[in-house]
Length: 326
Ligand SMILES: O=C(O)CCC(=O)C(=O)O
Ligand SMILES: [Fe+2]
Image (cartoon, rainbow, N blue to C red):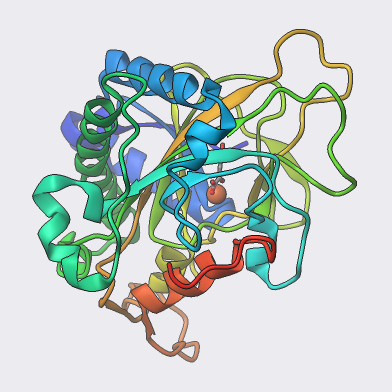
């Protein structure tokens, strides 16, 4: 089972607690590419508010939500049936049973200028529910700051200085996604899941999910699927493709999925998650770090972060939802 790491131990604990937190993170990133995080300092009221505005937005009529759909983009509103995370692995798979609303760095006022040249259209903000925009921006800023602290933990876990990442992430192309998994009163089409098996594309993802039936699972190295619990106030941290690559694949990019609620599950089966994706600068060239004790394996070729992110996010759009750009 992936461990729960207390970030407060790493930030302000004794030297031995710090070491222990970093060591447990390293072990779990090697084994699963994922761990649970508490002591992260996110304001519980803010977490509650972001879940509340997400729920209200997803409750709005479909034609209202579709006004915020940006075809060919992962930002704005993503309707049901237009995305397939399992297809990002290379093979075509059924669409995920979910809807989403996302903003990117370009939509955060104080950071937007840096991205004006990246061809990213800004999203149109829903005017309902009230405080949707403020709440998402507050959460984005808090999650962005937290992601920086998690990077400090990960740098320690790898035994590299934090500066090893800093110049590749000072204009990080982050994403905040609200994901709604509707109530399932009948089973979805064969093979379809709330989110098909995949790895996340970037450096790390932090998931704040509610504890509904039909939740997150992670795959072990020998192919078994384990339920990942979602105790209130705990985040799940996933290592993404670019971080795994950065470590020369010492760490895994977590293979995970969101399963359907069991048929006939009693009570409410609706689920919601708030996911913050922390990515490098779009133009960052990612090359495997020179790690202590690294075996002398051939080093993979460098990748340009923005090219990888665009490639994967194109693949996640189902053929029914073509579009020009990321
Ligand atoms: O909803 C979740 O718990 C995870 C969603 C996810 O893995 C993703 O959107 O990449
Ligand atoms: Fe994911």
